[in-house]
Image 1 (cartoon, rainbow, N blue to C red):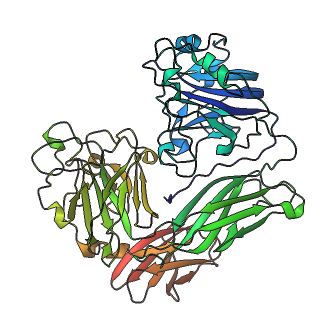
Image 2: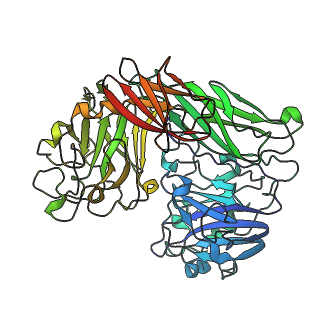
Image 3: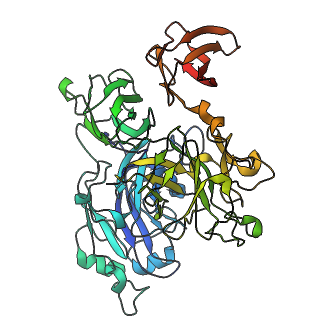
Length: 572
């Protein structure tokens, strides 16, 4: 099973004075402007135009957000604007592509500004929808971060079909048993805008009965005692990045809200040590599970049933793959003239001149044979047998062509699937090991950088810095595959000093671990933010005692084998 390096699991179990439920999804094969519809039922009064205190749409304090999952992308990646619905009370509402076509297909239903909003979002039968109400997921259609075409656990593909919700309480999670979906292409012969002689979708839905007709069904809002504690999101991070499959540890974090409900929660994990914030004591915070062995998946349970509560939550967290590999430079958008010829073969090609540059951030060789590179749409490259990156060296994967040049002496490959085809407007690059564990994730949307400006995006400084446009790091170059950002060749010794791993950071327990990829005595000098010397010591058992330091920011000057590196730490 595909494992995601950062998982966002949105789960809700709330008591509802108001609710919004996804009740129907209609996808047809009609030509533009299309018959595509999402039906919602509003229980109570909801203001779709309430953007909260910050008055900014699609932020956490909005009253309602409609997330749209395109081809398995994260829920947070796309939203559909339905604010024009305004305030609605106890009614069905519709999100449509074209009102006139809807009126033709459903002549008995009135579509106007009070119950209908148009959208230009191009939806498909393998996509999902999610309603967030006052910060809580209250309704969802589709499995999180999964394209319906690739879901082997449940069949929810609705291409040229209709999906309708049964009259069961909607707990805000994806449950295929709550839905009935007609066969794919079922609507082709029953849509008047597509098939000559067909009556209308309204007539066809009436023959299907049940909750298929528009505006039918009820009983979706949960009643009775319900849990208002929510496990909002989980993430995992590697504490070390050695080359073996199980020689590292990782930390899992679980954000929660709705705690401090008067009950005592018991938190348990199948591996690792439980710490962080306690939902028995605080309304929101982060539970942490530390010291988990790489390759070990865990299940974390959070329950107050032992104290008379009704919350019995759990979440499965899959191990990341922890290796010393980083993405140093990406090129989504080659320039349109010969200056875009990044692979040096004398021909500018929009697909062939795209590239991803990797760096082995260790003093040992790194074998990535069988690892894969995918983007948000498809598998793009499988590293062939005997792909071994030398210590502190780079590897470049181009989209195609015949790469010509030295590329700083780096290993050069072309995409095994014929192209990288990275989307300028936003794309996620995922690197998985042969076991399916995600070892690297690059999400261009998170960087806040426009990747469609005819140049690469690179770390500055190389390997350790944040991502920036290449011309912001070096105005004279649009890209530097296999080379440093200044166009020079990599010197191995230059980056040995970056081989220290310091964790945890921020520090809350009085100790910080300092792990080196090299052997030899480690000396640590601590300075405060004014540059004043605080301590000078030799590390023992890879641990530095900082319990005597006050809360604040400090700098560690870490030295080993004539190499020195300065690291910032935060003590809380």
